[in-house]
Image (cartoon, rainbow over all chains, first blue to last red; front, side, top):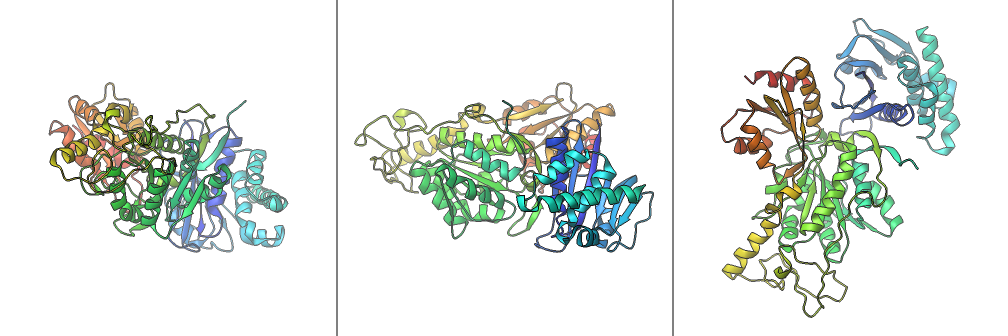
Length: 181
Length: 377
């Protein structure tokens, strides 16, 4: 039975738990797979290391947390330092190139581009950096189709922000494809 | 028509389960990691004509649901560790006055404020022994989002059927994780109504045992007048210290659960038929246990799992039978050995009970359980 593990990590308030939820929803509701999303965060409302884990499988998922991570997103240096230890050999590591400058040693497929600045400059709003990152993770992991992931994004955001999020998702997807080519 | 599905958190599912069961009153006080239940109820209850009230604290919330239940409502409160401690005196009141209610408690690190966002399973003893005095206790420990939804409905049913407080206790992992849930159609799952009086208001007694161990409960405001107290009481609800009445009433209250263990206790047996080692687990820990059992089987070890779904009353009969035919029991739990004590009591020294106890806010992972399985010779 296939078991694919993703971790979205960064600082509290960056929207990474939301990104994880949307990824899991895409797999579970739209892709017809099974998925579990869990999270861990500190008592503070903003800041502090935060992570959201998503397990995707063709069959039932027992243990809901990560065992060996297939793909990791790190949006801060602290998260990258703290959460890379169980990334599997040959695993995918996506980082924001402006914020994560010290990369871990190991045999990883590292993809980096300025995620937050892409949201700010190319999409127009920094607040959708999590959706830019999600688009990139969808492209890099191939666990859900682009169409299903987009459906999950659009069904998770308020009506007024649909176009903004569609654009963020799309740019993130394209940037990751270009960066990993 | 295909059924409605959603991708929900355990806490959100709990609130929707309560609504399915006909809950029409929620009294609460927000506390991490249970607050989502109150959030959903505050949005949804007014839509179905129910009432939501945020009280001044957890004690007030417990008092509010007891009062609302006596007025005929189906009631829920949600809380976590410190809030559960505060509610204890009134939980005892609910037991002795025999007031149906559901208490949903998410287990976080403790004691006291502990670790608000960290998972734990350290409230399971508090579910039975938290309030003083002999009293019936029912506590359910779900292990998935779907099961949380269904167990909240069952909690309402049990509380109405046995006229007593019922607790549902997911750990923080189950409460906060998200999974796909399939909503049952209306009428698909059983919803037990409250047993109402069949006699006139003049003839009514709130603890009339001629109707059996669970007397019918009239709603305040419906013309039936009766006395409710936390003191030991007679059939008409007024206090007494008469030895034979107090003895009989106390025994009856506890008997409501004790004589119906087979109706209340639920569990899952996984790969137990030929098992040499049984992992007993509940809540999120059972998911790690299932993973570990599967790996052990691949390695040729005859391991199985007994998953406790109803923690109280404890599945004594089943554990005693297991202890007679396995070589060892492994118990992983996020406390310093609570279920372990119950297992040792049931095992009666026949087999070793090996514990894995974690209170550091981290989940027990499958590898730890697998290692312990291998220690059983």
